[in-house]
Image 1 (cartoon, rainbow, N blue to C red):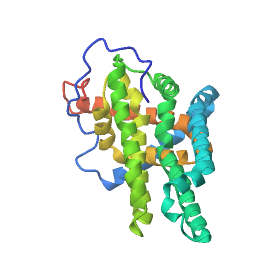
Image 2: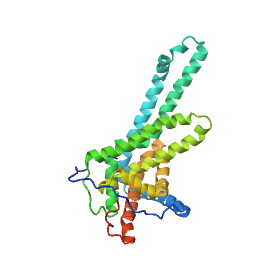
Image 3: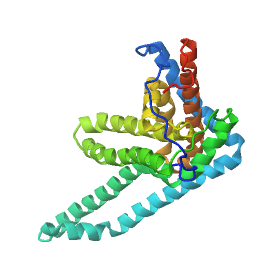
Image 4: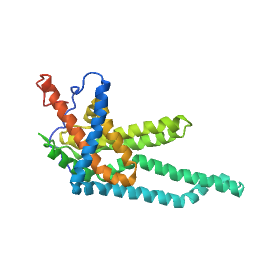
Amino acid sequence: MSSLFSPRCRGPRPEVKPGFAVVPSGYPPGLMIRDFFAGIGLLLRGFGIVFRTPRLLLLGALPAALTGGLLLALVITLGIFAPDLVALATPFADGWDHTYQEIFRDLVAVALVIALLFLGLLLFAAATLAIGAPFYESIARRVEDQLGGVPTEHDTSWWADTVDNAKVVGASALLAIPMFLFDLVPVVGETVGPVIGVCVSAWLFGLELSVVPFSRRGLPLAARRHLLGQRRAMAFGFALPAYLLCLVPLLAIIVMPAATAGGTLLAHRLLKQQAQAPARLGRPDAEKPF
């Protein structure tokens, strides 16, 4: 979510400094399991927030519905014109027997439509976040304000936020193509490929959903990666089911606003714990966790 409507920066952006670990060195299996289920709980709390506030649900449903409609229109359009496009792209099949020619070109046309649908589903979440940036930013701000807000809110520059978010959305788009090609590898691609693709996309999805609390504190993408990486099981526990649910276009209309609220809860919780860590260790820089 970009901060297109955030005030422009009036001072230098805070430097990202090495943070204090919110967890002990390593990642104990017991804590990892608890964190994973805690992440799921944050997503469920996000559903509770938007269901109790229908206005937020409606606000977040509009971009998801628009993105789903655009994806459906693209698939239908390609389905209509695919036979003609395939015929133009395969002149070498003009001299084949009519039956084999039709079978071959029909298979290629179907493969094109399936490929577009697959890429569309992988990019659905990122595209919805890009289209609905101001809507989801509004939801995230309202949720965090209910949690107590931000002690000192930083004015972030439009350009810095746009670059950070473009990196995440661009990574999603660039990874979708090699992951699709990897899926075509026999056996390995059919089993391992989808798992890797979903996990990577879910991680990027979690980074996008947690942007607003970091942006309000003047913290860039590097800080998001750092902090969510410290509690990666919690981040995956939240982002993985949210991403999988968003692969169902109609269900995504409800999931996206809930995931935005849940991502705000996740970021707010980790930022609060990070800020308190130096104080627990007796460090004087408790207000500068990064």
